[in-house]
Length: 106
Image (cartoon, rainbow, N blue to C red; front, side):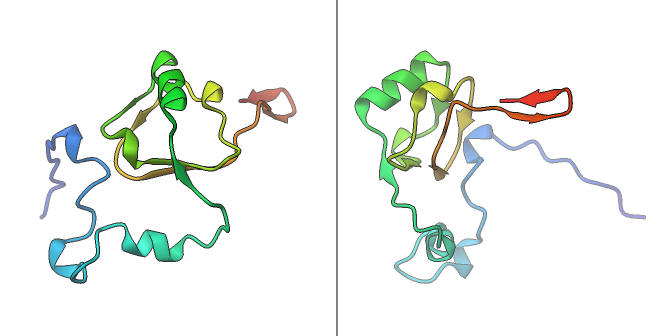
């Protein structure tokens, strides 16, 4: 009977190495499929220095701030206590919450 195997892996590898190197076409990176499949029509850009400053002040971290891509409708004030690994795209953020019956979720 095969047992479940739990691996202890460095957190620094989160967001990376999810496609085996031998399956990545020459001249491409592991994000090439995600880039092809992204048909949202949203234009993403890198964070500005001010946005990074706000994110850090709000207790956010990233293994590489250059891998965080955002839309022009991004509001860094709304992101708090998050850890980002690998390529991350963040679209439109608004200061609203969802409400259903007595449940309210920001």
